[in-house]
Amino acid sequence: MQKKAMIIYNPAAGKNKFRKLLPDAERILTEADLEVMLVPSTPEPKSTMKIARQAAESGYDMVIAAGGDGTVNEVVNGLMQVEKRPKLGILPVGTTNDYARALNMAKDPLEALRIIAKQETIHVDIGKANETEFFINNAAGGKITEITYAVKESMKSKWGRLAYLFSGLTVLPKLSPVNVEISYNDKIFKGDILLFFVNKSNSVGGMETLCPPAQLNSGAFELLILKKVSPKKLFQLFASIKKGKHLSSPYVIHARADKVEVKSDADLNVSYDGVYGGKAPYTLEVIPDALEVFADEKRISARLRG
Image 1: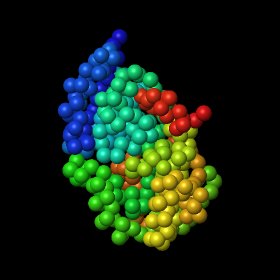
Image 2: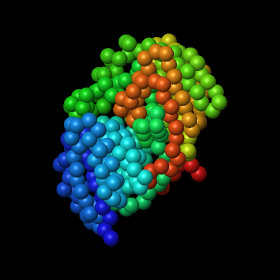
Image 3: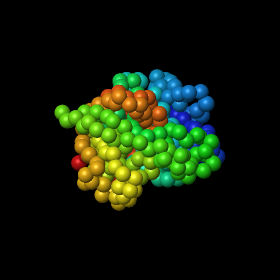
Image 4: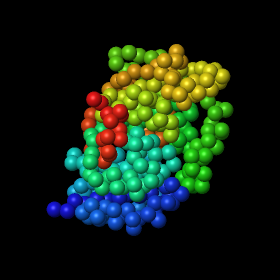
């Protein structure tokens, strides 16, 4: 029986470039003996999530997210709501494409689609947030993380990754520490932080050096806590992050954990995969090997457990 594939695409992602590629995308999958359905997302909130869930419930064999990290997040949330989940494909046509970077997918969407058409897969872990939300790449909290979901789609379409820089210039003057309680591995950290990350991949915000030890299928998160530091030391720390040498800093806590609990008496926003999630408290847990994702295992062997 011919397998069914649905491409869910964000018409506004990546300066609208994917819409021009739709005929070629359909041809590539059809030549791989797949029955193809192309479905655009709509401005309705969570439309991509609803479409992905409907595809899963209708028996599609694969669902391909064509967009940025927000599109991928919604597709993941749709698929995780059903017991029998289609295989997931990711086409990098957004602004940062963090998870596509983690998979080392080709940057060209059609080349990435040719990788998907080979139908080779890996199993990856998924994060669960407060029982009702899911994420594939990371969860984060702290003032600076608000940049990711504060940027409007129209700005990203016009300016690309520069949109995050413009937004960051408005947020940095307001960058203030937050007092938190973070529990992990029978340990509790209490104190002021600038931000925390709970990662499943090495790539966050386009930086592939943020969490070098991260593995997509390790069964655990990589927890990073950035303590309160002076502005001067913060810039020094950012410089060490670019070199991947920050994990040994006295201002950074790094641990591997399968469950992380975050509490705060202050107003602490939490995002996952760059999408606004809600306010703490948050309980974040790993679901091992929850999704089957199209990837060339040889290209990412270093990012998988041995």
